[in-house]
Amino acid sequence: MAEKEITNKILKYLKTVPSCFAWKEHGGMYGTAGIPDIICCINGRFIAFEVKTETGVLSKLQEITIAKIKDAKGKAYKVTSVNEVREILENLEG
Image 1 (cartoon, one colour):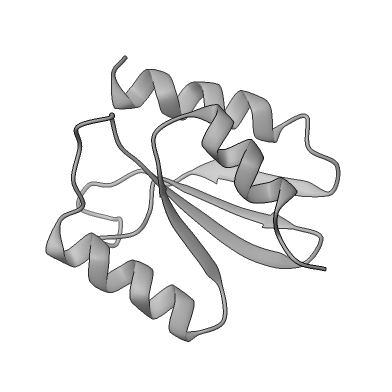
Image 2: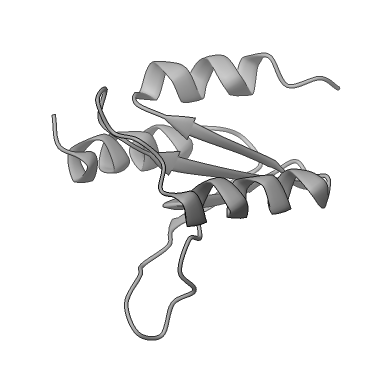
């Protein structure tokens, strides 16, 4: 499955999550390089998902950006499926 398909399935799932506002971050000349594919706020919490295929790897810039989000007390994850996202949200503390 392509990253675009995985991203679309994750966004469809996130629309069913109560108190969740999520969007696809679009790259390009007006975007910020390295920003994760999906940004969301769930119950006041910042969560970002970088979507990859099973064999996809994070670029160095993506790794740095995820680390910066975590340093700012946000949550950021590399994910490969809707099931991973569901599991992450189920296991968020508090």
